[in-house]
Structure formats: C-alpha cells, structure tokens
Length: 116
Length: 117
Image (cartoon, rainbow over all chains, first blue to last red; front, top):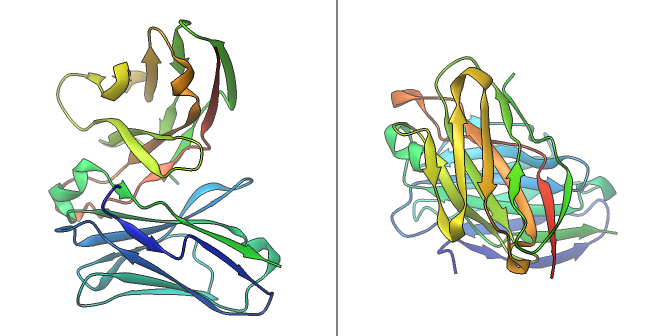
C-alpha cells in the first residue's frame, strides 16, 4: 500500500457517459497529479493541484476536469466518454511544490476505465 | 518541449545477466531525474532519484543509475537481474527547479523487461 488511494479500481461504462475518479493523497502530501496511461501514448500528464488550486496543466481534454477539495482529496471527471478514453488513470501525490517537489511522487494503484 | 526517450522498448534477459536501460532527456537546464518500476498489475514505485550531488545514484533492489550531464542521459543498471525484476521501467524528468517547481514529471515510453528463469 503506497498510501495513495484511488477508487474505483475498475470502471466499465458506455460511450457518452460521465464518470468520476477519486484520489486520496498520502497523508501530509498537498500536491496531487493525474496521469493517463495507455498502450499507444504511455504515461501522459493531465493536471496537477496543490492545496486546492490548479498548478499545472498538461494534455487534458476539454471533456475532462478535475478539482481538489479542502480535505485534499481530488476527483477527475471524464464526460462524453469515447472509446479512446479507455486507459489506466493514475493519481500521484507529493509533499508540495518548489523544493518539496524534488522528491518525486507516490503513485496510487490506478483506475482502469473501459469505455464500451 | 521537454521530452524523455527510452531507447529499449522490450528487453529479454536471462537470470544473472547484466542490465542497462537507456534514458535520454531533452532540456537544457537543471533537472531532477527518476526511475520508476511497475510490476505486473501494480502501481508505479520509485526505484531511485537524482537531484544533486554524486551523479551515481543507488536505489532499491540493487539498481543504480548514472547521470551524465554532457550526454543528457540517466541510464539504469543492475549487475545481475533476477526473475522478480520482470516489470516495466519508466524514466522521468522534472525539468523545473527552485520555487517555481510544480513537480510535474515527464515520463518516457517505458521499457518492458522480461527475465527468463
């Protein structure tokens, strides 16, 4: 157990639907990062939140959004789902930004999303 | 744009063979460098990291990596692999420093290592 909790572990949904993925960071970590892992694209950075605020944005589609709540858990919302959105979605956490970001991440176990 | 290139996509070795996985990055400034491992069905785990000091970094499970700044490389090595090292290995770079560092990591495409018993 890495200390980063992601739910659900598996999700199967139909095209056009909306899903919410949840991530609880390791205790004491303020930064949360979301990544999408697919066979053809590898690990793609989506978005980062630090202490409730968006800090960095990557290749995140407009159909996707995220937020971080006061208790520091984060949710990734995926809407109007397409077959190509099927992937493993990882959340990671780190102590913070600046020099605290030098230490790398702790990853969760991921949510495997299958769009049918 | 920053990028990370892992030259070997799939490596097959016999137990006790030596391992070297290549990693090059493109970024002119100072960097933090990482290797992560993903065992089948599991989350990514940190193997080792470099952000300053001795360019030869030792990690868990007998792995080490050498940062060669002039070559923009951070190759992963292990003198003698075991069947349990079968996994996917990812090199990653954090190309921001100081107070502006968000911690964002750019990952390579990964290298699948298969160790035959």
